[in-house]
Image (cartoon, rainbow, N blue to C red; front, side, top):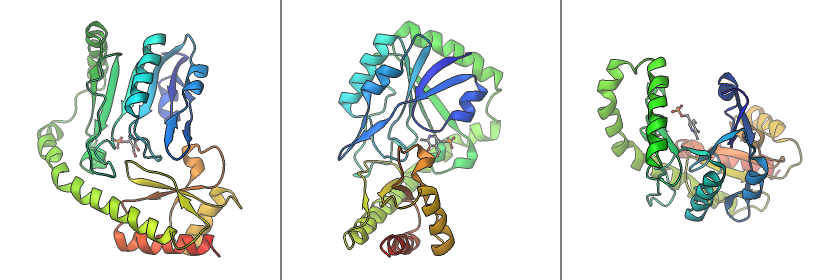
Length: 274
Ligand SMILES: Cc1ncc(COP(=O)(O)O)c(C=O)c1O
């Protein structure tokens, strides 16, 4: 794998380094909605590039790859003979509750769709996750044969978890409606409080567990997040954790219990409007 390039969004740097993969970030652009910056993608590709990573919906922007973007990604990957690696851990958590299309049936190019019960059933400590491979028949068969060697090398998943997986998966039916309700409720609360002031706004979110708050960049996001923690006892992530290109962004968790979320937002906005 030495020196191969994988075009990626997000902070997978350490894991990639261990596998001797060079990550090349490409931006998402925001203009009322998030979109993939295809010109950047085209500029980043070279003969060593092997795959494009897409997070669907992305964390923390909450943006799904649209049908037009999926088509453009397929064109791009076909043109440069690249695989698509799609992280779909948040797929089920659309804000409007409508199901979104998974890449598991994407057969235009070799596609690896990843998910796991960490988010699907809210059970991060169980370490149950999967890869679905799809694409042109020969390429998929070859990739699955290689994946089998890799899976064997890492040894099999432990037997208790293998046996428990159907039950753990079933828990999503109980958890997901509760979580979706909480996320929607918190988002409404955020909008209600934002409407009462003019300093901060939030960016559009279509899925996932996070909201991105646009705040005045009077200090670094890091300093602001530390101030919020020290002065207000509220924990938020500064935008630079997610490679936002400038200061002025905070990332809020929407799965916080409702009363804490309401109070937390009140404190954040009171500090920022002071
Ligand atoms: C987009 C995304 N993919 C994957 C993961 C990790 O999932 P897992 O707990 O299954 O390793 C996270 C964790 O927050 C995530 O945000």
